[in-house]
Image 1 (cartoon, rainbow, N blue to C red):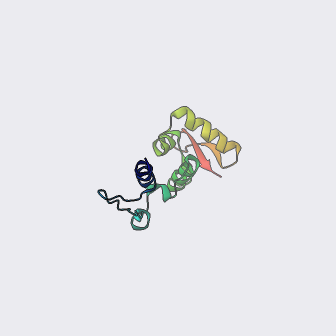
Image 2 (image 1 turned 30 degrees about the horizontal axis):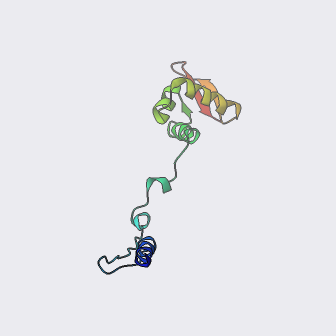
Image 3 (image 1 turned 60 degrees about the vertical axis):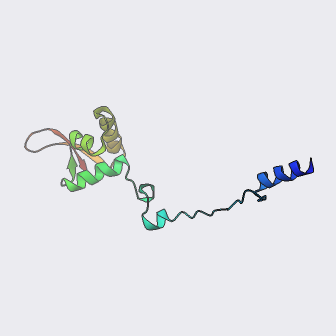
Length: 106
């Protein structure tokens, strides 16, 4: 009975008994030092993407430009652009040649 209890405690607490040697291992994670993961890199939100696209296009974007940049549905982009207009980040304008609706950075 004592031997059974001793065996139980050895198995629970990692003690080695005569027939089975237990080798403890230490694992060190160095992956983030060697190659940082994508989670550590700065991710831009949709507003930043839209403003970056506008900056790259001379200060103006269309709804289609924003849909391509973010991958979001058209209705969600229109709502986002309207919010950006109320926050005074952008303003609605017309393209000088085609008359299409564009959004300009203020």
